[in-house]
Every structure is written in structure tokens, then in C-alpha cells.
Length: 179
Image (cartoon, rainbow, N blue to C red):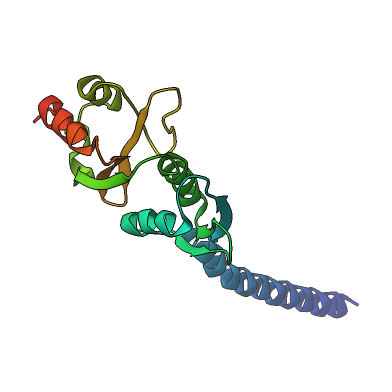
């Protein structure tokens, strides 16, 4: 009977080690998948109906920035945009800004590494006069006739502004920049 208990104990130990080995092997195969899904955030989509600009013009603005995958829905003035969640927020801000009267320009101001040397958007707006300047995550809102966005995208600081005001903004940045 003692020999029988020793035999059962050894079998239980072997079974326990075997089960632990299987669990470790299974968990190990799930880890790369979890890391992979965190690194490659799933793309989302959003539909944007444009009121003042054509779908072709909206596509042109987004292509100039190089953000999202954009297509026009057939026979409509509507864009279907696929991108990550943060990019969709930026795209929404851009399209709300440019879906207005007049043309807009997109200019690279400087590398993102130099952003700390730039004046604040409020200082730029005060220098340029009669313009509201926001960011992708805090777009300009209010009754000002002219609105712009100055923010970092990818590795650059860029401005999205009315075409007739972009040079004023660049000049205001140059005058107020801390070098």
C-alpha cells in the first residue's frame, strides 16, 4: 500500500509538470499575438460629408498631408477615410477646417525636434492678427473669419491655414521664434 501511494505521487508530479509545461507553451504562443496587436492598432473608418468643398479637394488636402487612406463614395460629396483612431481625430479637425470658403495651404514649418523653439499658437495668432489657431486635438472654434491649425504630425510641425494668410503666419512665427 505504501508503494502504491508512492507510485500515485510520482504520477501526480509528472502529470502536474506535464500540465504546467503545456500551459507555459500555450501562454508563450499568445504573447507574440498580444504584442503584435498592441503594436499594430486596428484601422478604423469614418465617413465625412463635405458641404463647401468638393470630395476631390478634400482628398487633395489629406493626400498633401499624407494622412489616412481616403476614397470618395460614389455619386456623393462624401469621403470614406480609414486610419488609426488618433489619425481620424486629426483628419476630422483638418476636414472641418478646410471645408470652408476659400483655399487652404499646408506648409511644413520646421522639424518636430525644433517645436519647443516656436512661440505658442496664441502668440502667433496675436502677431498675425484676426485669426484663431488651434491644434489637431483642440481645433480653432469661434467666430473669427480666419482659422488655422499648427501642430506636429509625423516628424514635422505643419500649418494648415487659409492660403491668403499662410505667409502672415509664417512671418509671425519667424518674428516670435525663440532661437
